[in-house]
Image 1 (cartoon, rainbow, N blue to C red):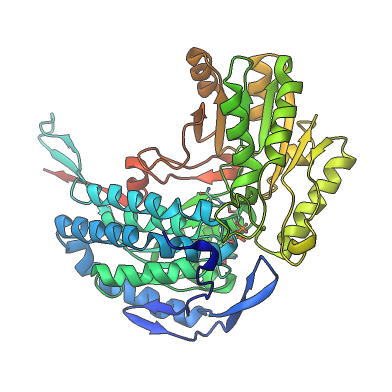
Image 2: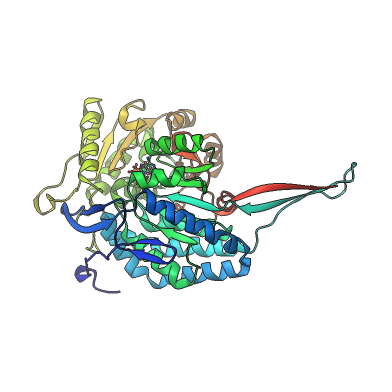
Amino acid sequence: MSDTQTMDRTPPAVHLRLGGERLGAGEGGVHGHVNPTNGTVDAEIPLAGPSDIDRAVRMADEAFDAWKRTPPSERRRLLLRLADLIDGNSEEFARLGTLDNGTPLSTTGNFPPMSAEWTRYYAGWADKISSDVTASVRDDGEFGYTLAQPYGVVGIIITWNGPLISLAMKIPAALAAGNTMVVKPSELTPFCAERFADLVEEAGFPPGVVNILPGDPAAGAALVAHPLVKKVSFTGGPVTAQKILASCAEHMKPSVMELGGKSANIVCEDANLDVACFHGTFMSVGAMAGQGCAFPTRMLVHESIYDDVVERVAQTAKGITVGDPFDPGVISGPVISEAALERILGMIDRAKLDGARLVTGGARLDGPLAAGYYIEPTVFADVDPDSELAQNEVFGPVLAMTPFTTDDEAIAIANNTRYGLSAYVQTADLRRAMRMAEELVAGEVLVNGARNLAVHRPFGGLGRSGFGKEGGRHGLEEYLRIKAVGVA
Ligand code: NAD
């Protein structure tokens, strides 16, 4: 382990990566990458424009025919090689992840092994894609079967909060299924993507199979609308999703939408409170400064333990070290941008006006952190389930706590949102947990601290959290289309 305090903080040069080319400039101009720890521009990022996207899509389309015919065992071998390379670059990826968006090394260090695991998992699927015989002998004498085939060029657009893991949740599955792709990382976080593109090349994927181009929303829109892009996979916010969906509707294009959440965490009176309070606090106002789609941002607590839990959560939140993300002892870094900071502080102010009780935090950090976009870990109690804070994603270090009396009431409050990404249950009674799991309206239910983003479990929400899955067999199937064949 290197000395992280003296770790090199120089961002790498970023390029548009298409068909084996590395371009230092694009039609989309330049984006000044802002270091969220101090608000200064630390790198100039070349941006793809629509004509760059068009070239990349055409290259991906040209590469498709050979790639779909590449023996599955060879696709598996290349993906396994990529996974090994991700592992071999884990320290560099942690560094780049921290440079990308200010997430502390204590968290970005977890993403490379996770990303290697996602890549290995889908490598394992590459040679196990099977189809069905739908009828071998029918009255009419016909033989029927299906073919699970890749789409062709997939357009992948991701956001900024998990720049490495978001790539690993999409690219390996799409490759295993035999698709080629054009990937547009967020213009805010291009560094992990640059290294990922290096490793794709080093692993030996043929040019044109994976093209990675940083770009702004206009580049994203051009990718979605391109006639040669046959499927879109998007991770980001619901407002952008609506624009992408409108374009998909116009072009009759299927899509996967991995969007935001307002996930409830039900803490029952029989829960292990040490685990529940630590997990519920760390995962809402600590890790990634609250900028996680599936984080448990609403804590619903049984009334008999409510005061105790509020106190424990407040103490845990006060103990979270906020600061320089390169300091190995730091748990929580800055939020992504000044705009995000203003938006989050606005929501905190309105929560107070709505009658929520501020238990700890609530302000921008000053002193040596004043130039960065740092917000104190913030906990509100007595939050009205219908208020803005309970209904809207903050995407910042703010937890909303609300008491409940019965399990049915907890479930009703949990389900009282437009989102449906994750839900959490803390109880010693697994029968109770499984009943809640059945009733909660969410794409996943995690019990007693079960980990997020386990690759074998399909992840993906419903309602305002989107649709479609990443992870597991279902995640692979998003990148396959089924053709039925009937033989007389
Ligand atoms: P965003 O939606 O503004 O941007 C995401 C990406 O979309 C960027 O690459 C951006 O350039 C691109 N984009 C913007 N406008 C576009 C357009 N018109 N056409 C095509 N592409 C366009 O990102 P955000 O809202 O800041 O991201 C945070 C959101 O992402 C949160 O809601 C969070 O919960 C969600 N998220 C979801 C998951 C998940 O897996 N469910 C994971 C991480 C983040």
